[in-house]
Every structure is written in structure tokens, then in C-alpha cells.
Image (cartoon, rainbow, N blue to C red; front, side, top):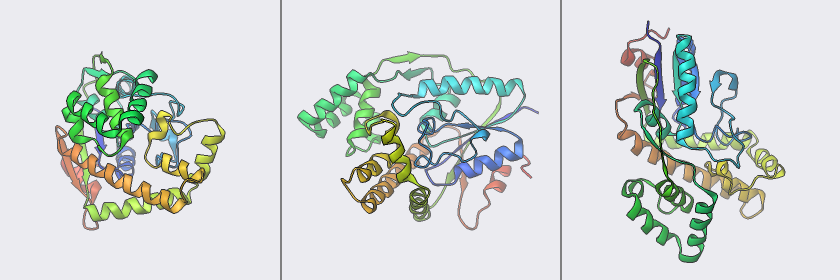
Amino acid sequence: MTPRLIAVMGPTASGKSSLAEKIADALDAILLNADSFQVYRYLDIGTAKPTVKEQYRLLDLKDPNESFGVGEWVHLAQQELELAWERRQSVVIVGGTGLNIRALMERYGEMSGPPSPELRDALNQKLEREGLHCLVEELGELDPIAFARVDLKNPVRVIRALERAKSPKIQMTVEIPPFNSSKIAISIQTALLDERIDQRVGQMVQNGWAREIEQLRKMGFLPSDPGLRAIGYRAMWRAAEGEINSEEAIAMTVLETRRYAKRQRTWLRSEPNLRWLFDGPEFDLMAQVSNLLAIDLN
């Protein structure tokens, strides 16, 4: 039987990691991380990194002060897929960075190179001198598609989109073995997802997110480092430095996470060849996967 390559997608806190792990267990498959922030060491709690890391590939690859982009992820993912194919082993990909999965499975051949520190400094200086609206106008001229998708009130997101637009493109060949490939995504009602996001952020705090922030500070990392663009880290960092209290940091993180989930749902609506699962008290996700993909997961 041809090994399966299954990408499990969905908005943050939708339960895609739990579902992916169940599918992987049923198929004796390896799990491939596609989250661009779970590749960073020391960012465990705030990125909801799996607790049993041995099950996964492509975790803990970089320090928080190192850059990491879609091109590098695709290159590493291809290597893992080739190894799995040699063993005739199925692979389940899971992670919230939809561009990584799309670039791999749709064989994108052109990727943005890593942004230069000089470009980031120049954009930050322009933000201070001329304000966010000037950066927003520039993004609209350079990349109308990103302009329509990015949170234009978030300077970090606007600057990152400009970095991608201004960075040179890297030509690369995306080739993966002939797995039986599928992409599935969890659809969940907004109210239920918002409730799960609230619970998830609260659990992260209980699990010691503040201690994780303190450890990062002691290690000499800075809130401007690439890895600390992950949702919630800069708010929690501000709380650690006394700029805001913990309740404010939690509220900011919840709001930012909900906005991110909304952008993810918008992204997924345009995902090619995607099959939908429906989540809620009356739905059985594993049964839906079995029916959609015609595989026995018992």
C-alpha cells in the first residue's frame, strides 16, 4: 500500500495537534511539525509545543535570535519525507503555519529569502520617523495580496510582510516522493473556538509561561528576536518587565490569538484541495477522517 502523506490544518486551538497524533498512532506514521515558532528552542509553553517531542520531526531547530523562513522549512521537510518514503512509512504534517504546508504540498518553486537585519532596522526606523500608516501604504503598493490579509494595525505583522515583499526570491525545486497525499482541516464554530482559546491561554499561564519568559531573559534573548514574534511572548515580556500587569498581558494574548485564528480561517478558505472536518460535541473527527480518506483508523 502506498504510504500516506496527510496534512492536518485548522485555526489555532482547534485541536489539530491532538487529531494529528491520533492519526499518526493509527497509521504508525511520523509527525512532521509545520509550525514556524515550534522550531525555536526554549519556546515550549507559549507555542503549545508537544510534550512528547520524540514523536515529532522539525522541532527545536533554532535559537530564538535566529531567522527561519518557509524556504528552509520546505527544504528540511523534503529531507524528512524522503527518509520516510525509503522506509515506506506514512507522514502526518501538523502546524498552524499554513504557508509552510501549502508551499510543500503545492510544490511552490519560489520562496522569499531570509530578511536582512539591515532591512528590518530600516523599516523600524521608518516606523518611528513616519508612522505605521506609511508602512501600510508601502505594503499596499508592493504586495496587494499581503495588504488584504495582514493585520494592518499590527506593526510587527506589517514589517514582516514588507520584509517578505522586499527580500529576494530564492528559486528552488520542490519535489516530494509519490505519497498518497491529502490535506484536511478542522472547521469549528467561532464561539467554541474562542472558548478554547481562553482555556488554552489560561493553561499556558498555569503551566509556567512567566517562568519561561524569565529564563529567556536570563539567557540574553530580546523581545525583538525573530522567535519572540510568536503570539503572546512580547505581551508576557512586558508583564515581566513591569510595563503591564499579568491580567493585561493575558487579555492581550487572548485577543491577538483570536485575531490570528480569524486570519487562519480566511487563509484556509483559499487552500487548494482541502477537505473539511467538522468539530463539536456531536461530531467524531476520527470517523470523519476515515470516511474522507477511505482509511481504517481503528
